[in-house]
Length: 211
Image 1 (cartoon, one colour):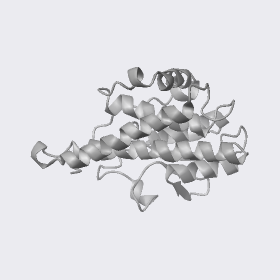
Image 2: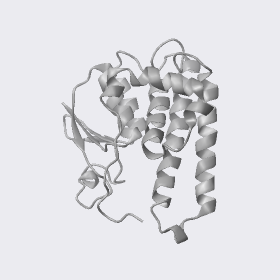
Image 3: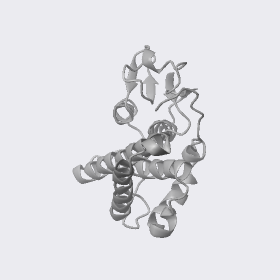
C-alpha cells in the first residue's frame, strides 16, 4: 500500500488525496508539519517539500504534478486526464495555473509572518496580482461549464477546487464568490463529492520559526 505524507492545509497534497480517492486507490495518510525540525520530510525528499508518495518498495515520488502523472500511469482508470490533445492541454494548463496561484498564496502567507516593518509592500502587491489574475483566468477557462474540461470530472476540476479551498482557509477576506459566481457554483459542486468532503483543508500550527 502507498503512503502519502501530507500537511492538512496543503492544496498540493489535497490534489493527490483526491485523485487517489477518485480512483479508489488505498493509501496510508501520514500528516506532517514540514516546517518543523521534527519533520521526516528530508528522509524522503531532499527538497523538503510535501506531498510525498512512498511506493510499496519504499521509493518516493515527490512534487504533486509528478505524483499525479505517476498515479495516472499506474492507475489509469478512471482517467483524470483527457486523452485528446486539446483536453490534455486544458487540464494541464489549469493545473499549472492553479499551482501558480497557490504558490502566490504561500509566498504571501510567509511574507505576512515577518514583522510588519520588514514586510515588502511591493512583494505582496506582486503576489496579489498573480492571485487576482489567476482567479480571472480560472473563471475564463471554466466559462460557466459544469466541468472544467469536456463533460467529465478531470484533473482540471481538482486543480480549480483545491486552489479555491486553500484560498478559503488562508484568505477568507477575499470575496471571490461575489466576483466569480461561476467559480462559486463549480466549487459547491466539487465540495459535494466525497473525495473533497474527506480532504477539506485546515490550518496547522508551525512551531519553529520560519522567517
